[in-house]
Length: 181
Figure: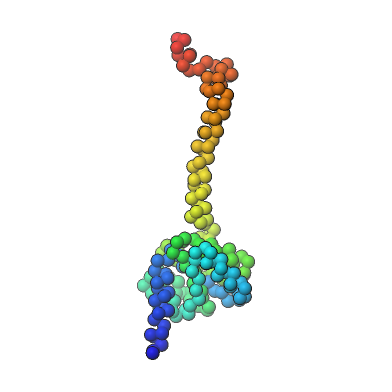
């Protein structure tokens, strides 16, 4: 069997992984201990991110003709690839968080939703909260005015309604003032 035939399944595996990926991030994992690498893989797996170490030439062949082709300049030295098909910010967020504790992990660059970024760009994407967090913030901000309105209405009902509140201030309700004229 020729060497090309042995390498073809690996290139196809990489191509299949990045085909539906919302984001792909390349990292240099040199200097990580086995314990750190195990912890990193566990954290990425829990976040729904696939993390694999491939040869640069294999990734180079798989990247040709895709949005990830912009990552070929970063294929120098040991490279690992993290990608996610569900959350566009998850690989960048988890890797950046882990790089804070393991300073040997170096983010090289990545592609998020078809746009290539360098290490600084991936770091800014890592600062974006997850979709679930953003949705909960949105719903929280939408719920706040409704909750405040309900609280005011409840206080009015407890005091005897709008007429009682107006009478307590010394003003006549609008209906009785119009009827008096």
